[in-house]
Image (cartoon, rainbow, N blue to C red):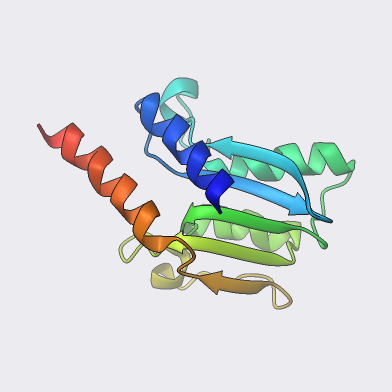
Length: 137
């Protein structure tokens, strides 16, 4: 999760909403990313989506059955849908998103996906609060 937080810091520095993600398989990081929606002018360029694509390319296939996603913020409904189709084994996220998170939206993950919540949640939430505080000034 610390590597995902580093990615989120990179997003923060670029003026992107600070969400970072990494995907790991067999203790090896195979994908790392952060939000790029502003830079790419693409609403789908979330950290998770970027990581899913990179991991699938690394593995040479669309399924991430043995992989773990570490992401600083609870995935949104769009990302959860993509994670469902990727059949990712495990999702570990930091801060919950009470307004736009997949759980609030009622989006289902793949039935075999394991979810761990709240890992380094305070650090992830503080980064988001700091980002939006600078935007509101």
